[in-house]
Length: 183
Image (cartoon, rainbow, N blue to C red; front, side, top):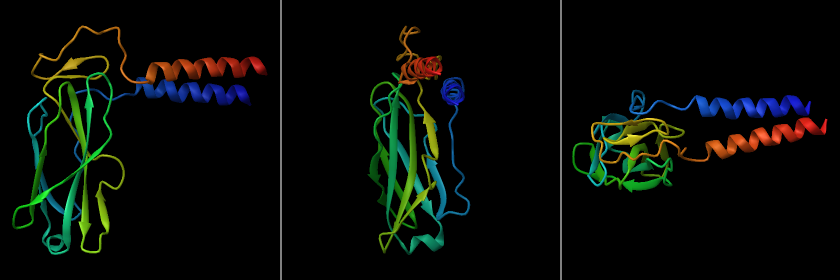
């Protein structure tokens, strides 16, 4: 039984390593069926430059929404993602809200979601779980390839694997080997 569990753990971790996403492709969550009528944003992030967003609410949501938070997470070329930050959007007029952030150096991509807050302080997350949008930068590294239309951030670090995937996989393989020996 222990061998089966060990093999399953190794296979799951190996799948996570090989199933990582391909870099450079933006993601967007559909807003149909939500209180958001539309979202307008830059389709590319750049280090040190404003990255803005405009959110338009549906007519029904305009009267009851008191605040909108833009929850962003910036990931950088070394494979690290900073903790999410909550950025309040500013109300303009006619159901329009906007805001901006400035990604730092070596930005790979920006993830985000929208939190709508009504007059009773109820929060509706779009999407309900995780981040619904991902916008890649103009100079990114996805762990294996460089991309974007700017090459100023590219470094010669082909031997570096970002993040914790490699050590975690090696630890799982070692654990599986030890569990198999015990039986």
